[in-house]
Image 1 (cartoon, rainbow, N blue to C red):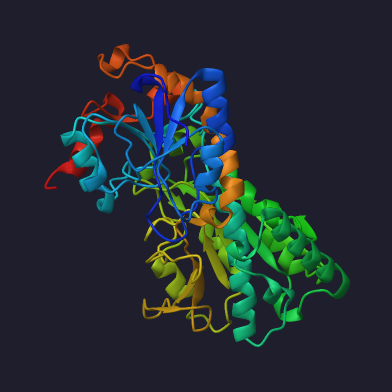
Image 2: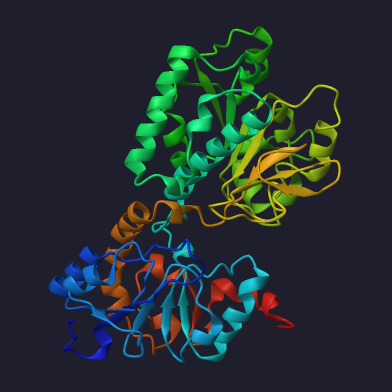
Amino acid sequence: MAQPKNNNSRIIGIRGEDKNKWEKRTPLVPDAISELRVVHNIHCVVQPCPIRIFPDKEYAEAGAEISDDLSRCKVIFAVKEIPKELLKPGKTYVFFSHTIKGQVSNIPMLKRLMELGCTLIDYEKITDAEGKRLIFFGRYAGLAGMVDTLWALGRRLAWERIRSPFLQVKHAFGYDSLVQAKEAFTRIGEEIQKHGLPELLTPFICGFVGYGNVSGGAQEIFDLLPVEEIAPSDLHAFIDKKKYSRKKVYKVIFKEEDLFTPSDPAAPFDLDDYYHHPEKYRSRFGQYVPCLTLIINAVYWDNRYPRLITKEYLKNLFTEKVRPRLRIIGDISCDVEGAVECTVRTTTPDAPVYVYNPLTGETIDGAGGKGVVVMAVDNLPCEFPRESSLDFSKHLKPFIPAMVQADYTVDFLKCTLPEPVKKAVIVYKGKLTPDYTYMNDFLKGV
């Protein structure tokens, strides 16, 4: 076991994840630890973790110390939230805190970080000058989310007594690797090209809401099928002409201007205005929903924005005489009662879906029952833990030396963190930084 022989200012820690049995990811992989030690003289203490996708032995071989004690570490890295009782005074923590929307379950942790005089850096807010995230798992959320959504489709169709090649699909975690998963979908695509889809499923149209990393990951899986893209403006005409093929699947990518319209009928859509004044806009996504077999929701949402799909909309859709075409909503963004209001709870990788009945508001686990199937796994990247950790580590590693060298004792304005990282400092020495003072409202009464 390697023992750091330098001062504590150049020691970082990696926490052992323990939120649930699925969390096998790590923020830094063994190769990154080795490079940081050799090139930058940065040493690492890694907490032992029996489920981590990279075993403790690999970290030890990379030169890390394996120990539960992270007290000597200047900066401590994790993936998921750290239980408040495990936080230590004055430490700098880097993890996904899930606090910036005022998520109720994590506000006590935020309060404890402040009480202990800690510094919190949130990966989610490490962005470039244009606001683009630089360290993320989004692509892998999209990849796993698409796999699980198509897994659900196979089960839903079987419940409807419709045979389809999607019954072959496994849970995302059921594949040994992303490569193996892609090979499986390539075979399914070949089967569709050869034999076609059932008439009752034709045309098979998937709507992708969003066009960022998450949507891109989902499309990466879907595009392994024989796919043809349709513009949102052409969707109704495409269906009316009935010139679609049983040997193809179709996708539609929806951008903001397709999804929302100003409440004032005389006003034009303006993207910048929408982001700054979302209260002036309403959803128009409902006009497209009856055309879609699947919906993949892959956009950021908070309560300032209009919803894409409301419970009331679905209630009206499912009371029509003709059975809706819509089978599955893959809510990869997974905001409870958020953009997709029928996402009333989250799910787990081994039980990823439930059926939401719009007429009663009730849910039933699984893919069978009256209503729409909702895939709402809130921890999708953990289903491809090795690949997602490797990718995340690659993007995080370049920031580590600056995080270690920074002086966290000086005034926040004088702290020399790189600008993308500095923008992600939510709490500094126990106080909310200027960009996050709005979060004081979340702390009231806690």
